[in-house]
Length: 99
Image (cartoon, rainbow, N blue to C red; front, side, top):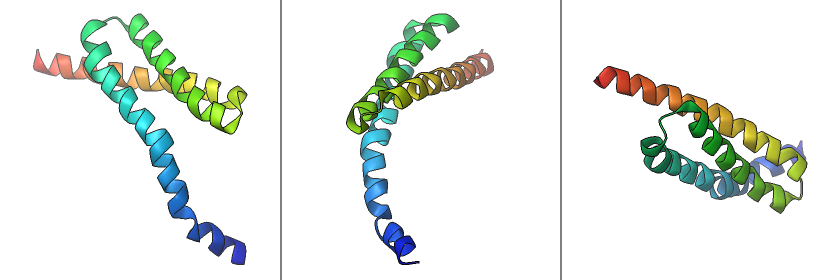
């Protein structure tokens, strides 16, 4: 039972590092996709390719820090593809609603 209270007491440290390492990457990913990639690449193929590369890079940083690239790189690629699909579909809905 004491171990559970230790984990709860250290929860703020986990949240802090999650914001630093994952929150900053997510913020940079969304800014790049919204303001640089979306205006230049309207086709799905290149949009997903860039999103996949950014996901790969997002998985590279924690993979190096934790020394487990075999886990973080594939997860980064998959997350890049899924988030790219979500952003692309949403941008098409917005364009069709404004047209």
